[in-house]
Structure formats: structure tokens, C-alpha cells
Image (cartoon, rainbow, N blue to C red):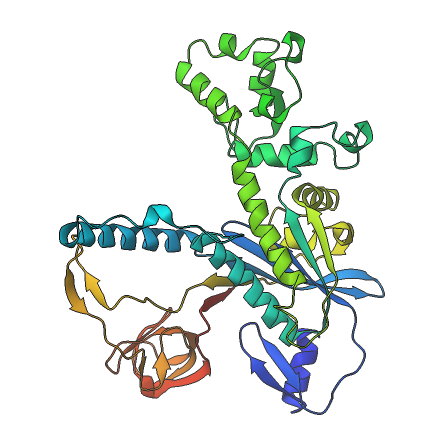
Length: 417
């Protein structure tokens, strides 16, 4: 419901706060009732995933809630690299002659590395939560970032498929990701980029994706009909880089698409139903998402991309001043039993207790501080110490006696943007 309506219900005592992030109220005197169809739409990304709720009202489709989930895949990979290095160093010192076991193990079908599994679990967790908080009637997912078959073989389904409504969007979006959204010849960023043939068509070049790159208008005109060797005669390093990059296979794209297929299979299975009926799933490509966003003149943001996923994203209303919830995956702490120095030797043990005076790092609290430089009312996330002095986000040291628990740690940090 509208924020004003929610305030009125809370003020009259007809509703209560169910959860603070995302802010959710629960009605006290009503069960069931008619609701509008609501679709949860997801745009999975490597670092940030966009999520929106789109309601189908009488006057059209409208975004009623938006969020961006910030993943921690890079920190997981870094932690695993550190752990592997320390373990190998330790075992080389103590059991250097033991036969290696890592080279005769088979991975199960559908295996994904922990950094990708973390991203998948973040998305599935929030879909489960959203289903608890809202009467969802459908799911829309950007299933593949790029149509790789179409990129490799433009004639896969005939000229109509190649020159359809989305012609150029799949290719352009892929090239933007591959070449870092900058001109390959001069390195300019934040300028209009044009698709450029590495080997000119007049000299036998094809339209295959391996022969395409991106260039600014000035470089594109300057290169003209020259071969890339002629154009970059005085810059052999850049020439070598472009040639090696152009032949890079689509394995990175395939890996990203595999992650999205994993999410799709989980959504389609019984893992999220929990006694509820299985929801219909709409899928779309990254090219379709970009086409929908550009035709509606919306800016490039992850949650807006989520709203524009699939055919249902062709005509979606978005409030220009809409607030978005930034959700950052924080984890639940470390598994290590002790801290180690740079050589991998133990230097101190970690305390076993993860709570102190009933609080845990990551809890969201209300702080009413009656005196001192931080006097006032504050709401935020705390980090505990094993002494009566906690660290409140944005405030500093706070005594636990001034705190009231609002929401327990759920592994995520929250911020309104």
C-alpha cells in the first residue's frame, strides 16, 4: 500500500510493524481479500542484482518496490585463496611427502564455484522472503545475458531472426561487456560508441562477433577502410591486445548464463514453493531488457533493468523520485578457530561466544542516548565487542543499556538510496 496509508493504519492500531528492512506491516483485523497481480522481477548480475515488484493495476503496470542486492563473491574468492595458501604452506611443512588428493576428485554435475553459489543463494533467499511479505503471482527473470547462438551464427533462424526488433541490441550489449564500455583504439569512456569491423567488410571481413569491436565516432571515421594493422602501425601493443581479445571465446558469457540457468531451475523446482503453488516464470534476454529500457527512456540502473525484463517490461511506470533499498550481503562471520599471521602460524584464538548481552554483530537497533556528544535517537547496525561498548554504524561507541533490538542479524546490511 501507499506509505501514507501505512502510516494511517499504524497510527490507528490496525496494523503492526512486521519487519524493518524491508519495511513491512501486518494487518491485525483482516485476512485474505482481493489483491492486484504482483510480479517479482530479477536482473541477476555479477556484483549487483536488481529486484523489483511490479503491480498490474487498472491504469497499467507500475513498480511498487525496488532493491539492489550487492553480492560478496569477490570477498569469498579472496578468503578462499587465503585459506588455500595457508593450508598448502602448512601441509608442505608437515606432510610434504603425502600423495596429492586434489587431482583425482570428480565434481558433481552442475557444480558451481562458491563465489557463484553465494550469488545464487542471495537471490533465492530474497525471493523466498518476498514471497512471505507479498502476494506474488509470477516471476520474471533475465535468463541469459546474451543470446550466444545468435552472436555466433546470425543466420541461425534466418534473416527475420537476425533483423528482428532486437537486432543490434544483443550484439551491442555483448560488445559493451567484452570491451569494457570504452573505445578500443583511444580508450575514451562515457562517449557514444559505434560497432566497428576489425577487418573491413570491403577486405573480406564478416559480421561474426569475433570481428566486431567498439570505437568512438572519431576513431571509427579515422580508421575508415584501413585494416587494423595499418591503422595501429605505431601502436603495436594495442594491436596485439585487440587481436587477442577479439578471439576470446564466449566461455565467460556461458558461465554467467549457466549461473542464471541454475537460478531458473531452482525457481522452477520445489525449493521455493514451501507448500505454495509453483509460480509461472517469464524469461528474457539482456538485449530485450536494454531495448525495453531505452524505448521508455529510463536511466541505466540495476533495479530499473529488473523492471524492464521480458515482454512484461515493455510498458512499466516508474516514479522518478522512488526510493530504492540497497541490500549488501555481509555474511555471518568467519569459520576460523584462530587468527594467523602472514606466515600462517596461529597468533590468537577467537572467542567462542558470538553474542554479548543479548546482541550480535549485524543486529539493527534503536539507540536512545540521553547524554554526551551522540545524544539523541539513532537507528542502525551494530558491531559488538566483548565489553559493554558497541559500535553503532554512523554514531560510534554506544553502551548496550541504551539499545533496543529492532531486527536480528540476517546476514545483510541495509541502506535507503
